[in-house]
Length: 242
Ligand SMILES: N[C@@H](CCC(=O)N[C@@H](CS)C(=O)NCC(=O)O)C(=O)O
Image (cartoon, rainbow, N blue to C red; front, side, top):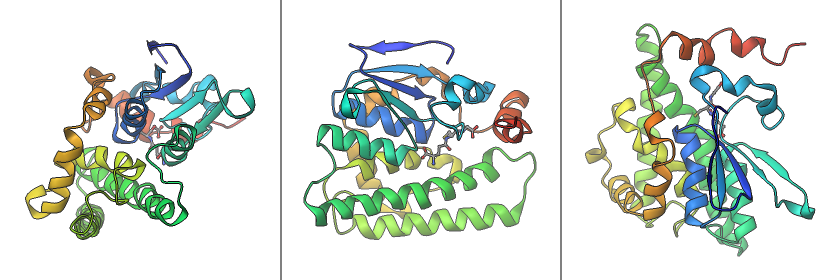
């Protein structure tokens, strides 16, 4: 949290770094025209381990929010991108249908992202772009799983315009991960329905405004020694110990 960037009157603090998981939240905030204050958490320099941030997310990961206008007129801190998206959708009554059948279609694709796309694409990117040495078994395992998940999305998007039917928090969660597909060595020509969906969402002004947040700090892959220590080193095991 080296600096604070506020847009409009502050209601929501966004603890953020420009990564696919992080970018999901400014997309939703911009789509809903909510006012927010960006609090950078430079995870490449270990700022996720600061006590003040661990009180908001004990799991030392961005994104997280504090809504100063939370339920019961009290501030509420929320971590985990899926929970944040659902919270904001319920707060604004946007991008998550209220009718239960449609709602669970969106929630299942949101959970598909957080339980499958995020972890598998993440490991694929780790072994292709972050690991200090090439481990073919790990690369094959996670890249094959990434390709399989692209197939699932392509078949779904052949039937409906967006993952949840209409544009929703499920798309906002998934789109930033497809944006960094170069890291996973994915060719979108092999997934034409994902390609159509990707371009459609890319053209949304709110998405472009969200991508501009801390854009100059965006750095995917090729970590330096300090970033490697902060993200994958002993600091990860030391934090939280008495
Ligand atoms: N399941 C979490 C994943 C969040 C996550 O992995 N965040 C990464 C950046 S993309 C992070 O903060 N890493 C820092 C660390 O692990 O210390 C979510 O969806 O919010």
